Amino acid sequence: MPCHNQAKREQKALLVSLYGVVFFIVLALGFAVFTNSGAILFDGIYSLIAFATALITLKVAKLAEKPDDELFHFGYTSLEPTLNLFKSLIVIVACVYAGVEALMRLLAGGTEAEYGWAVVYGVLSTVGCFVVAGSLKKMGRDTRSGLLAVEAKTWFVDGLFSLSVLLGFIVAWVINQTEYADLAPYVDPLLLMILVVLALPIPGRILLDSLREVILMAPPAKVVDEIEAKLFELLGHIPHQLIELRVTKRGRNTYVLVHLVVSDEFKVNSIKELDQIRYDTMAAIKVWNPEVVLDILFVQDLALAE
Image 1 (cartoon, helix red, strand yellow):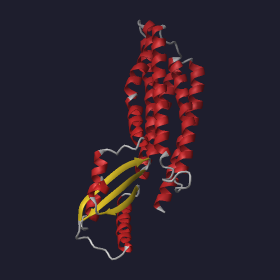
Image 2: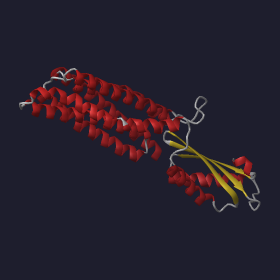
Image 3: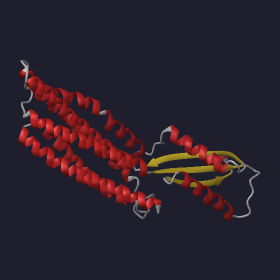
Image 4: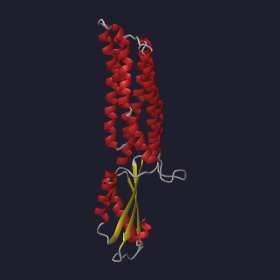
């Protein structure tokens, strides 16, 4: 039941994200036309991209809750890192496009815009994006959802773009009131270029983390060490030569294959006793971390664990 409730909370959070994206698309495109601002137009285009990926994310979140079947033998959670990889690539492309566009506008003499109304847009968009990003980040922690974590970072990047628009137009508006008014059009593209450089590491990290999961690399050493310590605590009483772990993370689930190489002192009367050890260990692991999927193999030959 807790897992079902978490899934419902995750999907509810994704719907909030979806509705938020629709609102900011309308807001950005409306202000872009009214202020003649290329930066605000780009912000709207970025939100439009986020809307398309949010629709896919909502679908994947529902699929991830389905059990394994004939098509996906290990369940649908493997779709999560694939989607996150795809989303990070889109954000990187959008950032690079924004940087190139800003450079072209800078070389062309900057951008003239209606600075006062652009500041109003910047305040609304910046505050809104950071509020949604913070809410999704908290919900992602509470539900242990990788999808919500990435969605929160996408909103954070969008908030940074909106912040650049806000700062750019505030500075441009101030300069426009002075004798240096001819420099005001350069402020917006220059700030946008700086922000792109600062924002790119966020989708870059998401890309690398998602790639690790897609190609079935082991998760970070800290995660493996924690799982290893817990399994030694649960299985250490069994006479053994070696407890060998193989760990991979696929979306919200962490799959652990354990080779328990038993020693000569280990005796059982039936397979049922081995099954009971598995049941007890799996139950304890689920209480400790519900996202861990565990398989335990009992062997005596060390070569079988290599």
